[in-house]
Length: 440
Image (cartoon, rainbow, N blue to C red):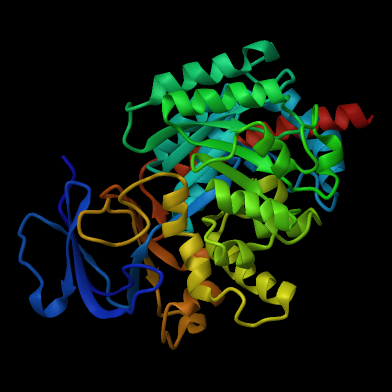
């Protein structure tokens, strides 16, 4: 049985575009929000867990729509490199040598801790050995859409590439309906690591099982030249020619799109996830996010993995998203703070097809964070714009996921974080020993 929880005396932001409730309460019963109101009408409940929100803001939990959680192990391993060199000379070899079940579990749990402590309550993950990633998120109390990776090369857990789609099929079938926090998905890595036949089979699997189909797309300026058996003249047109773009497809990055590509995304209903910090660090470019949103394309926000960011703080990501869109267009109004907040909440819920999250509404799942407003950099707090331009993940005091308290007073209470950090440090020592022996 989930506890009844009442948050009282808090400022409340029900969604990104709403006005603040200056001093109100939320009541949570059975994992769902059942009441929201002003403190003048707060209900009495003797058996409820009371959270005093004085000096805090209650808001929807943030949604990280693209991450590779297990890549916390590679944080800082190969910085200041362009995308192809970074992938082919550093990340792919490191993954081949070090990605195992134990690594995916502990490194994904470390990512879950970082996200929960900074206000993320839902993540879309894409990696390999995804049973371990799903278990790590579940054990941490983090809601997750877990996409199992597909590539046309030997991969962790899939040494025979001809079994890539079948492996993901087994993963999906083992998790569908098994846990309320975990939703399985298909993650086809990219059109330069998957043949047209593989992409079509992966998309068919996603459609047959009613799950999301994720793919990296148009991240690099030279990606068109790398397509396997190109069917058209851009990555977007390649996927469209294969019949893969529809409302169940989530395209990640989308930095190098021309007007025709945007027309196709708009017409097909495919969603987009932008990862501004990663795109800047790898010098990939700046996605035309403001234009996409103006066209009605659903755009979510993601951090990407720690190896290319190196941080999983979604407040930091929102700030960067809003600012680079202004700089790209030289228009200060190009992408307002509230729109960046929408990308990290309601839009993320929409593109992940997760009903009942992304906003504080009676009947919704109780994915709620409390932000401490007493810090100097949040004083005075006039409106929600400051959540984007001044708030840090470290300002998050309490996190509730699916009606369960998972962070209290800035501490994870669902698992022993010290043990997790110790396990990841042991894995990192092994990685460095192997790297050093190769270098010598």
